[in-house]
Image (cartoon, rainbow, N blue to C red; front, side):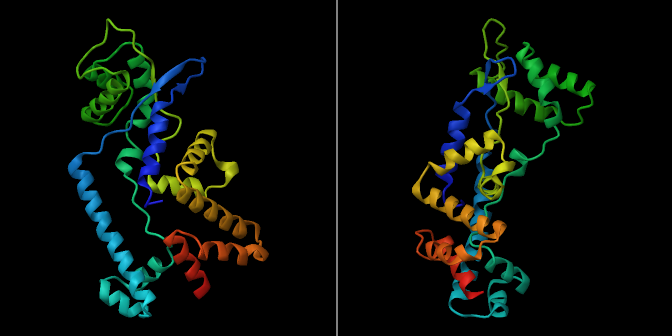
Length: 258
């Protein structure tokens, strides 16, 4: 999934364009995801590139026949780390947890959204009301979320919007897709996915033939393992070995070696 960021971006764009159904049957505009600061994004990309290059170097040396202890000395990592690298068919991209993970504001978003949709668009007032209900976070975090609410409603900064009829804002049913979350959706059992997650996975599958092939091969392999169907393994292995995806070919080669 790490090689198909455009596919993830396309799915996230589709999700942002879809209204959020409310309990009363009406629709709300979704809260957009927080922006990634350019400098932070560049630094994260640089760190990811270094890790990816190290992972690729481990596999290059492994394919040349070098033992694990030699590879470890060459790349400056422990033999146990090298073994872990060689058990991974591809290097997973990190999830930006500060953006899409747990937040101190999460338990108070329903209250904040209710007050916002009721017409309270002053960040300091919202912050004080949340504090009165036990919110332990910072004012800056509230203002950042308020900025996203303004963006959802098309309001410029600091515009109160009292003379406008504004759409109701709500959190989307599913968080935006990251490479790690996309992988988790593929690996999760079908019965355990929510309707929104199933829709995200269907949209991701439709983005390109390569993404669809990766998803299909992964899910078919999981079924072999979970249903204990060794009679189908050789056919799956042949599909994987002739795949157009290098990561899948590498995984299949590792299985053959084992």
